[in-house]
Length: 490
Image 1 (cartoon, rainbow, N blue to C red):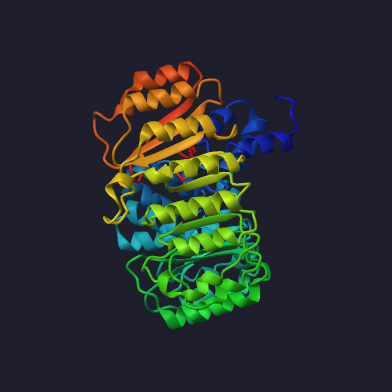
Image 2 (image 1 turned 120 degrees about the vertical axis):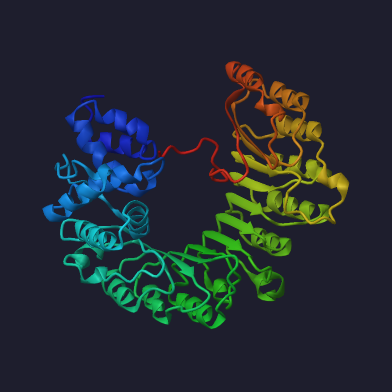
């Protein structure tokens, strides 16, 4: 291991970039390892700012400053900044490829009390990050941001290779003009759309880049769409219609621009205001190369059409917050197993009456690797038949153990009423001899007598090699839908 080529070591450590604890322990091995790992840790340091790390991070950043007057003043006022004048071993800031101005503002506001000091330290930190020695690929700008970062010496150099930009649509004119001038290589754009005071000139950020392949339009759920603005925004995407591969919106599109994304591979739709029912044009959507579909609060009819028109490329389907009866549940399961041969990940509601349809899906989708089943979904309307609100856990587990394809061993279950211990035992006993299970359960109402809180019970199945890992996840806990072992970033 010690004689491995530096490039090989870099590739290995890159795979561990979310495991800060392991990387930090590897730093101590030798100088070579340290010099490879430190730039990886500092490529995007903002994701590690948890568990009281803000003050330590601010101290390290301030230690890069040559402004002795400011440092002396701050160290007298704030004890956590004592010894900030000690120069760091590395030029950590030069390793950064993500510049998160949102986090910088939050850290300063949370830790520096006086307004004047707040401004002074902000100016100093911006200068430390924006200069001729740094170059960023990702830039995150907070709401109502009006600091003229484009006028800082070295800004053009810093932002010339920005590929990802996240900002609000009420962005300041001067900041916007600077970004438009410097950021001509944007590939991914994330826009947080406001309900008023939107800057119509922001379309320049869309029209200027030549290879814009990912667009996210994020609207807060309590905001109503500024339709005239959204119409202009959506129409500006026409230029990139053949290039766009990823499209996300948390609101119903105002125009039919979406229909022109002929090469779309990833689609995330969220109908916050339940307006999709009125959009008949959505029934004509066809994305022949679609690979990932994530639908929240989207009518079943639209979801089925998207699946049927995908030409078999879909490998990930995530359906949530959609209330539907047993007939529509049957239709959507059928649409999946008839059209998605290469499906790898699936999240959807299963009605009790359609467990046998689920079995057909398991038999037809032989590449399925992860299954997230919603039972007794909290977002179901109350007109769902009671018999379909209660699941026959024994029958469900019997089907999963008997008919799951060989590569399926990752399961999640979300429910109101937990399965009995005997039902879980039956499932795990029948799984013996197969790939060990990665299992997560998410009870809506977690109680102290919840059966899978029995640690000894699950430890026995781990010891027998039937269960590889088990998590009982509280509702709202930060696990990705298709994440069974949480990434380590703290």
